[in-house]
Length: 532
Image (cartoon, rainbow, N blue to C red; front, side, top):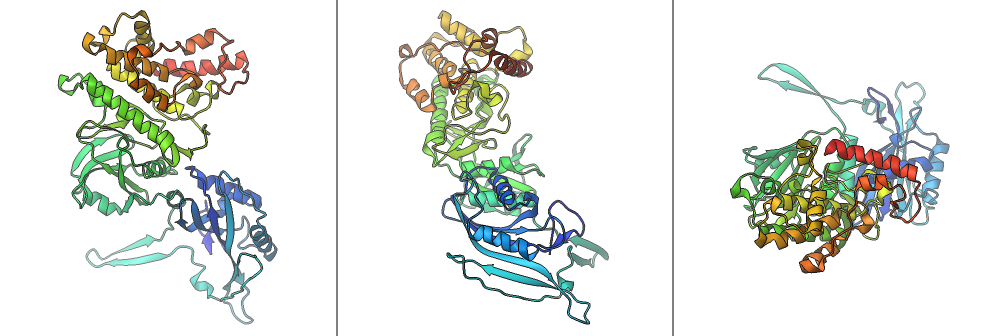
């Protein structure tokens, strides 16, 4: 017997155990929820009746998965219910969306049920019916085994530990691995991410010399400096204990674990041990970009030639994520704090907690909510009236990053401190338009060409409508051109669109009513005003 999901106490039931061979498994981070939901629905069941108990990966997108299915009411399924279930799976009557699973085969279906007690006996047992399925689906094998119920009807196992020193009794209740942890592990394996090494929590702390050298701390957790056995320096990020679904952790392992590029931070390993999670990266001795572009310390200022090289390196990293990976990756949180610098100030994109993975042929992404950092979030991520969410959402964030590199200031912070001050991207646009230089940004005449070029590219990247933004590949081409070859982009703003209700916003080319546009834009404008 197994305990029903979402219950406490002794609400146990006899399951039907199903072993499936899945092919072309989706790379989406929420794959397990979508698959179980559709699978359960077509069997006229609920997803909370399913529990993943085992799995292993084969190839790039294959998965062997074993699940327990428990009855919604009662303690076991009836013979008719099990027969229907077996026939539906054997004959492929269950059709899951091809976006989740390409195909499947039923390997085994095992029916656990209570056995009636023998005459004159108070004992009950369990009958196990194993149905094996071959390619034709006709061959079946029946195995019946009787086990004394006294060993199976105990839902909670208590281990009594006698501590002689304190002469105290300690009862440790056995707990099954949490469904969240199993879901995370299933996702990790289903994505075929075999590159990063898995560490025990004790090994992760040992790498950091028992958490001796702290590098930083944030809402996500704490980062410590460490060293691997081969001598390589690493940064170990210990995430705060989480009771959630662990989507950000999965995103991090799935996305970085698939990459290999000079401008993407390397993930050497990870730890997943109950609620304890850690990520082990290559160590970046020069820290993150924000401490250089926002710093008041003259020693921390980077020269324009170096900033220009860093900007190109970040663009190359994004081009790799968008177009060169087998799985397209959209980062969704490009900002100075997530750009790390190695000993030679080579930039590396980091922190993939908000990333989305998709197959390379897909140009747009489905979104369930806004993700990113205020000041860097593309308009279409806020509202679909601006167009579809795609790799160009990263291009917008990259454009904002370029402008902050030019201005040496946060586009959000400055507006909060000085409400009457013009929004910095608009300010820099007006100065470039008037051709009166960028001396207000403390940019000398000698480096003004680099600053203007970087600013122009940044302004193209932050066009409100994604259809007017360049791809990241086009951005790299713009860096190779001369300044006189670059045109000024059109000036688009939320306010301009609010004033002109006839402005066509829909990137798909379909019409949108002016009232809907005004309503949605007002919402986005309020977000902008509050944040800025």
